[in-house]
Image: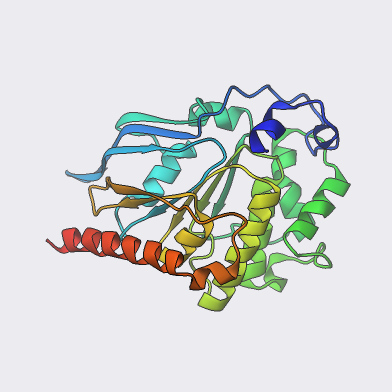
Length: 285
C-alpha cells in the first residue's frame, strides 16, 4: 500500500494535497541505509568518539526504533539523517537520497522531545509553518484534517501555553506530517511525559502512522514502546555507539494494546532487555 501511494502522483489524494505545487518524483525507495557511520567530536583538546562503524538497513516504509543506553549516540544518528550534523566517516541515505536531498525536496518530517512550538502561534498556525517556509500553498481543509487526525479538534486557536505536554507533542507530530514527508524522524517525542500519557500517545502515534505511513526512525529509551511501534529495533551499545543487534519485531499489524500482554510481546521485550543490559554493562566496564 505504501509503495503504491508514493508512486501514484496523479490520484485524487495528491490533487487534494496541501502541497499544490509540483512535487518532484521520488526515486525507488530502499528505506534507511546506513553504512560505516562514524562520528568524532572535538571537546577542547579531547576527541569524543560518539559512533563507530554503525550499520543499519531497513526496507521502505518500515518503522525502526533505536534503543540503547544514554550517551550511546542514538540522537547523533538521527541528527545525521536529518542533515543537522555531518558524519566523520560513512554514509547515511534514506530511499537512496542524502539528508541534503531530502531537505531540499521537503521530504523530512522531524519531531523532537521538546515540541519547539512557537508560543505566539496557535495550533493551526504552528502546523502550517512548514508550508510557509517551503513556499507552498496552505490548504485549510488539509490542516483541519491533520488537526482531527491528531485528536485536537476544538483546539485550533489555542496557544501552546494553553495545552498539556501531550497535546503539544500532538501538534509537533502534525507539523512534522504537514508536508506529506516520505521520511519521519522522531527523537524521543514522548520521553518527557508520564507513563500513562506516553502509552496513550504511543497508541495514537501508531494510528497516525498507519493512516499516513512513512519510512520512520524513532529514538527511544522505552523497550515496550519500541516493541509496540516498530517493525525492527536496532539495539546500540555504549559509546562509541555501534549496533549490537537488529531485532525484527514480527508482531502482526495492526497492533493493539492487547498484544502487550501476549507471550510473544514479552519474549521480544525480554530479549531486548537482555541486549540492553548487556550494553549497559559495557558502559560500566
